[in-house]
Length: 438
Image (cartoon, rainbow, N blue to C red; front, top):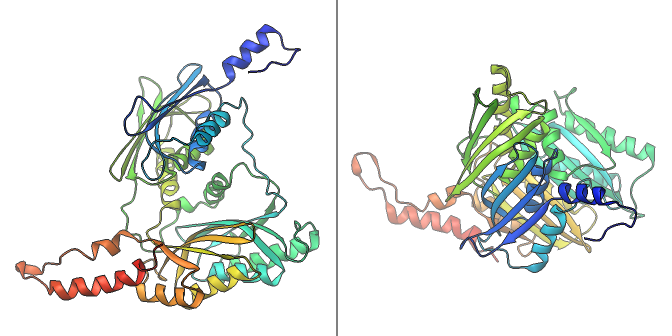
């Protein structure tokens, strides 16, 4: 560490104490890389550490966290998405440098584009209407993330002017964009809750989406689409002797799960003092010992219920049992409007989307179901792929139900249903999707 000439020894000591120290160990555990972080405790340090790992699409299999007193320690068992240890030196170096930044600035600008924030009532085809309006107003979508939950939609869309390639700074044009998008989001009966705004910088894209949906109170609404996955089990109890509230979350394991939970607790003004995270097969078990930022535990039944609802919502927002479609093609004006219109015309509902453009190549991910949240018909998926381009739009992930359909079916009283015809039919349907893998 290099020191500025004007720093005295006391100032150097303070910097050493407040700068997180990171040790990455591949020798201790045979199945995962250990990432150890210790530092003087400060607000948000746990979220910062988890965010660095999840932004790299790393999987946290286990973690032990303690920050009682004035010191913070986190030991995480980490793998890549394929379950392998971390061996890439550039990744290891990035983790060390990112976490060891004394006072990390997690805000991100939009790299010369204009950021739009949208919230409103979700419906089939809404996304195609949004992209059609942006195309009509000569807006080129550079990046976007779209989440839906309990009948609500939140989206961050980064746009540029199609003609100049620069951010849209004209106030009248921005007002036109906001007005037309707001009219779409309102629909027939969403006059008050539809919102559009322009953001210059945000703390973190996915954290901002959580904040937008939290502000929209999605956690208190009833599900609109059918959900095939079991709801997360969340419990909250007070440990009066120690002055903690103990929060337990059990649910299906998935990428970025710990970030979603810690992000929500942090934005609800709770501090995590101790935590244990464990995963087994496809299940995740998380226990957090928390207090308010003023040091008090959860104090009422209404607050306890609110924490339960908000954490369930945090887990569910990013979860999706829809078919994952990936589009990779040359970017062009109106591309997203055309693709999402094709989805709408064939009765597909987009439940989540991630849009990105690099060097004039569009790389987009869509999770789709049918209009009421059921698994989309494989034949419809294939029809959509044929219209958009078999080589451009590919199926990359199948919901669990497709695999379940291969299992034997037994009738009442033990009578075996026509197993051969059942399997042949389902294999045919599966083949329509699986043949698109690459």
